[in-house]
Amino acid sequence: MDIDFSLVLVVLVAICGFIWLLDRLLLAKGRKQAGKEEEPVVVEYAKSFFPVLVIVLLLRSFVVEPFQIPSGSMIPTLEVGDFILVNKYHYGLRLPVVGTKIMSNNEPQRGEVMVFFPPHQRRYFIKRVIGLPGDTIEYENKVLRINGEAVDIDLVGDIEIDTGASMQAGLLFNERLGESSHQAQIIANDFRSSSRTSWVVPAGHYFMMGDNR
Image (cartoon, rainbow, N blue to C red; front, side):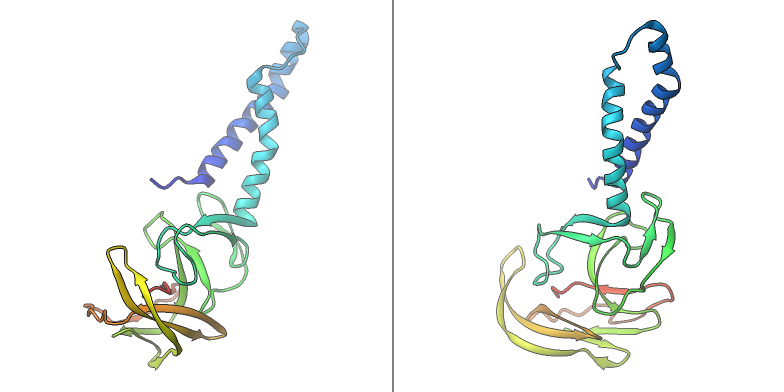
């Protein structure tokens, strides 16, 4: 089960903030009138954790957020289990939990690696930007074409790829997408056909792929 840590942080900040505010406005006055100076343990913990939780929430929401690579789709660039820090303001700022954009910044560029939620899903993916809005993407027989032109690649050499079930012969190559250059890999003899090999990227959307193909 995926845990929404942003939601957890928001709830904890709200609870601690409410207890701290309630104590400051009401409970502290009652203790003073009763001659009691010691704070309840709950109030003490809430006052201690509140600023820490606020700082963590702000950092995770607007500066950087840690992610762990969940699958092998970005091998050889990222391995399963790798921890990465994601820049949260490069493409603009969004409110935590609800995801409403409050400030725009850069637009995604071809070749960039992004952490994102696909449409109608709440599980994050980590892939590379292949197609921009309006592009026609074709992928057939392990050949990637953008707007009718094959993506420029240079073969690095033969490798063995762990598919989880067995080791398969593969190819490692350098791929150039716009100003970006990176390594990707394919299983050499796996040319299974798909019912669809061409896509037109709608406005406001991006075509994403992993480096392990």
